[in-house]
Length: 148
Image 1 (cartoon, rainbow, N blue to C red):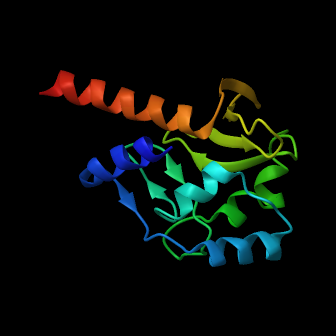
Image 2 (image 1 turned 90 degrees about the vertical axis):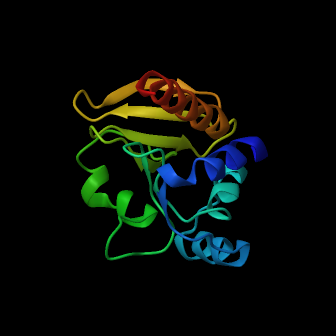
């Protein structure tokens, strides 16, 4: 996961992200929300608390409530979840710019699921958060190469 985070930092000019939060703040969030976040997701929050990566890329929901960005708590509220049949063990962690949700399975192996917002069903899966982020970086770099 370190190399993925390093790559996102290298591409920081293409990210609109929030400052990181501490492990203590993450633990407080987990306790308050009766939730245990997967380790890779905790690693991300210790580097940045959500925001848009690889603009115009996915918007990762942060833990802190913000007036300008939707938080993880807000993204998983009943108002949103009641409109979709996303299983309870899937935590919505991001939203793609065309409306699909990115979820992480809270049960091991913590796979990533793209939830089709139009058909209300899984569209694509990745084995890990690391794999999903790597795919996003690869697609972004491929696009950048074609544009230069």
